[in-house]
Length: 121
Image (cartoon, rainbow, N blue to C red; front, side, top):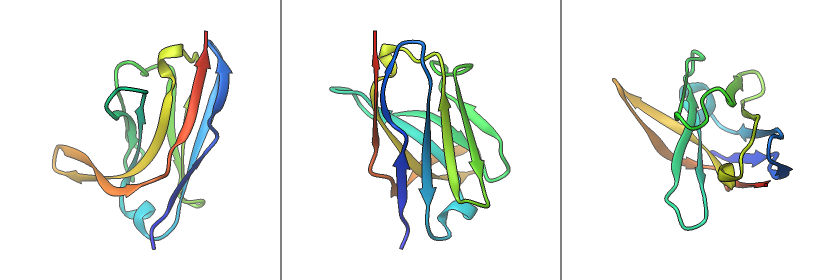
């Protein structure tokens, strides 16, 4: 059974930092790229960052230079280091296994339960 469990969310002031973790069980981690998505109140879920099995990364423009995604294959864990946080980063953050077909990347059906990040101004 595949499980993705996020942790590390919380309340932080603008300009602060948080590190999110997503621990994966099962074979999904070693076989897939992993990614982070977020959903703010009243908005659609959006892509934040992804990391391939080989360590290549990609970020949405709004977080580039502030967020860093990484993975520890020995621990089956993917991280999202968030710095210089802004109030507009407030959202529920989800990790997901990502499927790649050629140049097309999309989230699989495997998602975590989400962790709340709140950035106060």
